Amino acid sequence: MDASPQEFRAIVERHQARVFSIAYRILGESGVAEEVAQDVFLELHRNLPRLASEEHLTAWLRRVACHRGTDALRRRAARGGMAAEEYQDGMALRPVVRDFIPLMNRVEQLLLTLPPQQRAVMLLRYQEDLEPEDIALELKMPLATVRSYLQRGVKMLRAKADRTLKEYSRG
Amino acid sequence: MDPFEQELREQLQARSAPGGFADRVMARVPHGRAPRETFLGFGLGFRQPVWRWAVAAVLVAGMVLGGLEHDRQQRLAGERAREQVLLALRITGSTLRDVQQKVGARDERESFSQKGTVREKDDQ
Image 1 (cartoon, rainbow over the protein chains, first blue to last red):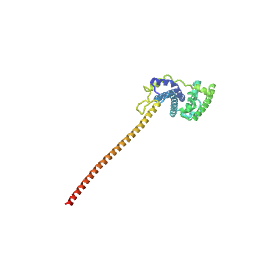
Image 2 (cartoon, chains in turn blue, cyan):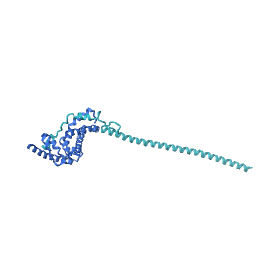
Image 3 (tube, rainbow over the protein chains, first blue to last red):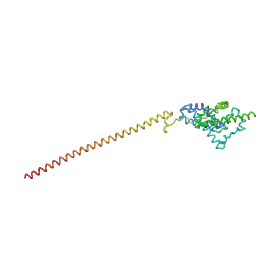
Image 4 (cartoon, helix red, strand yellow):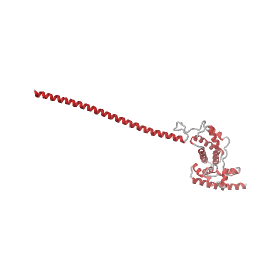
């Protein structure tokens, strides 16, 4: 594909919600998510000639947004933030987060309690509406791993959502 | 898909990017058109895979035809050299024959004149 500045701007406007949402839901911070999303579009600008169609471009954006999001998460963990492994032991929501977010945003917060790779898989399934086979292709992951991530992810989120809802209703 | 998964899907609809996001991206994008892919670093624009294949096919065909033409030229040069050698041999053979004939004729003349001298002596 080839694009003039106006055409490239149209591409950004068409896909910005998708890319920003993936980055935001992997990282959990709007500022860092915007930075990552901008970097994804700059990378797209450099790689645009290699992308032959709109479908190819959309798949490329999904994949790169997931990878750059998890990379940023790893960098943050290396700088002393939460290590990726810490997400795996079924941690609960931090009270400060739990008390101030509206109920409809809790799914996003619950998602942040999953390990980063699993988060990316869940996003591609439930935000982007991709089938497990397509997720496996896009993230270059074995299909069995994708299915396992989805199964365990839904189970964990369901358990956490039940717990959170009980805490919320208790006030 | 069970109700919980349906709920997940509804809650995880794409959220809007912050206001002015596209402006900020465009401010960071280098000016001008998106870069075209270069071919062998010479700046020729070959964006579609079909063009790449076409260029590769032309290059391969060029190499094959070049190789065939090179072989043909080599063969022609070989034939020319062979003809020249044969011509040289023919010329050499004919020259040798001439020389041989001349030498033969001279020997014959000398032998004839010697016989004549002997006969004159015998007559005396």
